[in-house]
Amino acid sequence: MMEEGEEEPLLELGSCTNGEDHDDDYDNNKGGFRTLPFIIGADGLEKIATYGLTPNMTVYLMGQYHMGMTTASNVLFLWSSATNFMQIIWAIISDSFLGQFYTIGLGTIICFLGSILLWSTTMIPNAKPPPCDESSTHSCSPTFPQFVLLCSSLGLISIGAGGIRSSCLAFGANQLRKGKFKKTSRVKDSYFSWYYVSFTFSVLIALTCVVYIQDNLGWRVGFAVPALLLLLAVNRHLKLSDGTDVLYHYKNGSSNIPPSQKLRFLNKACIVKDPQGDTTANGFGTDSWNLCTVDQVEELKSLIRVIPIWCSGMIMYVNISQASFPVLQAASMNRKISSFEFPAASFNTLTVLSVIIWVLLYDRVFLPLASRVRGRQVRISTKTRMGFGVFLSFTAMLVTAAVESIRRTVVAANMSAMWLIPQYCLTGFAEASNAIAQNEFYFSELPRSMWSIAATLNWIGLAMANLVASFILNCVDMISKERGHKSWISSDIDEGHYDYYYLVLAGLSMANMLYYLVCSNAYGPLKGERNLAEEEDEF
Image 1: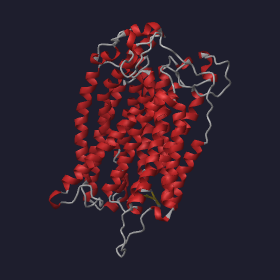
Image 2: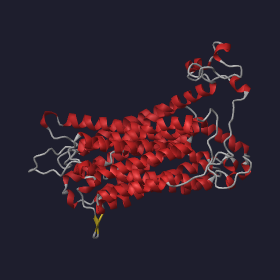
Image 3: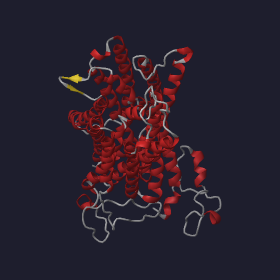
Image 4: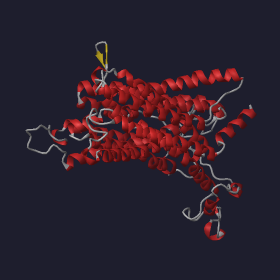
């Protein structure tokens, strides 16, 4: 168990010199950029494995388990939501007990076991329902044991992936917290951007290579590949430094610092009512459930303050999570370029490529050029970038609705799937602008003791978004087919009205833009921006 204030062990790629912490040599011996490939590598293998299962899972559930479009979509929404919800549980376990290093390792093992179980559904004949046809006398629906096996495999993948994702981002940031990196905010800003590039690059491989294997070599080979990738991640060995486990205690005078007046009703939690009964002789609380430290109260305040802005990201993630429907759009359109036909599920790579392009242009073109023109370092605030991402997400829904409306008026087979490029690109730009800024926002506004939680807030927003998306989907489905009408989100895309559905999402996105503007204005100045100004004054 990690004690309060204890430092997370750093990855070591060199020798340990009597456990001393040399900040000047930090980038050469301990931490720094040399350790990041190992951390990002484990994270990347998990992303390739899990995201490689997602695009065609709708096809697998509808074809092999005979589920309808709405049922299959709800299963995927709940699976994605569970994966992201697990991260907050793992973040608490990581910060309080295991530490980030062991959390990543344990999560990888659990995720691997889940992928093996999912692969077994393709190998064991009785693990899924038999083929269904009109002359069949038996039920086409999965039996209870078959459904339990499917849910168990997806559940283990969710639990394991939650452990990996909850700690990798924060563990990497920890490697840059000392030495020459400590006062270089530009390095950390770039780290968050390029970490997201590595994430999207992993998703790109999943949406192309893994999806291609599933489409052309079948489910058995297609589901075996993610399992092998996770096995590779399990076998990667990273050595912990024996000399960097330093236990820090609170200074005697630190408890005399009064708490802030923001959310002051919480200050009662750190008031000592009985000095003899509430504290020990050395100043520690006798019951941590009844008496908190000032630091703990301030940490809770920081978390509460970011929640309204955090909520604004959910509608954007609702829009991003509509992965099943664009696949149906692409499948009904002309996907051929010359003699090659693109798989419908691989069109999601356009979103991934857009994220990478955005980061490249912003980090390597826009910021250096703007800094040169202004004669000083230029940095766009996280709140501005988050707001711009919300706006782009709204625009993406309008474009998607317009393209779908056009598709319905023409012969879809003759309409080029290249019409889908704008909506995919706008979605990718929105994700890159908002999600990266969210990570920076949480890491700058929350104390370092909450960095694992900060790393999971984005994913928890995605989890909530999947639940909200499922709720919206069911409401639209139920309301639109009243009085015998065909559902807007029918399994047959030509009989439904997906353009109306996307207009509903566009309306919610517009309301979300107004909500974000109110929350951003109410939040006030950013703590990270004040710290950056102080650092620039030092230089």
